[in-house]
Amino acid sequence: RVVGVRGLAVELDVILPGSSKRTDSDIARAATSALDWSASVPLGAIKVKVEDGWVTLSGEVEWAYVLAAASNCVRTLVGVKGVIDNVELRPRAEPHDVKNKIEAALQRRAHFDTKGITVAVDEGTVTLSGMVDSWAERETVEHAAWNAPGVHKVVDNLVIAN
Image (cartoon, rainbow, N blue to C red):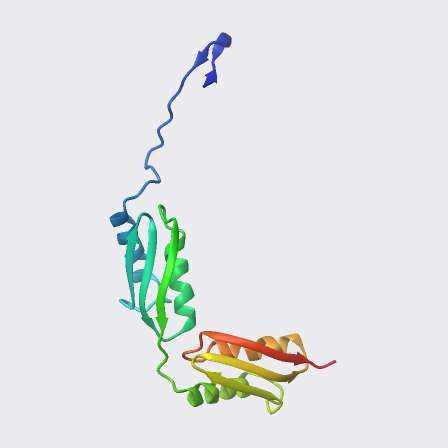
């Protein structure tokens, strides 16, 4: 209710063009399109199901960053109430391969000795332990771990030497 000119009460209905209400099929089409256009999500790797505005993602991917990218692609679409992430991480690499790749990446990227760092891998979870000289070195080690194929969790037990 709005008070108009000369103190008269006026009722006014406002109808906005292009309502934010979307059907589940509209949301599913938009989500599928967003995933298809994402450079971070392999084409066809993620399936979409929408029920009452809730988007359920399913499928299998090899990298942890794809899980986050897929969820971020659809989370902000008009009409989406929430995202249920049922995407599975299925790495191709064996645990010893993951460990070797992390250690090789550390040797290439870091300007410090990696012999004081221990890398343990168990079903996609990487546990880092040992001593580093700075926060920057700690971040470099953790970044290298996250970038290894098949890693879905990193436990950082690194200690910064003083």
